[in-house]
Length: 81
Image: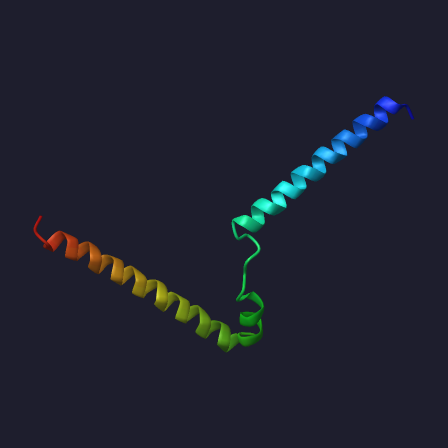
């Protein structure tokens, strides 16, 4: 194998390794790997009924947030400028 090919392979592998490291650091910085509740929820909600309860609780929370947002919008419309 010639030294030119060896140098090119070394350069390309270093570049790919650096890109992989940058992707890993970016993922860590943006919180892509932070799922604190995954394993805890998996242990707590492992039955079918518990999963249904968790889904309904999540839907209720979303509905409550939507109602609160709608109330805020209505309050802004009612208040005079």
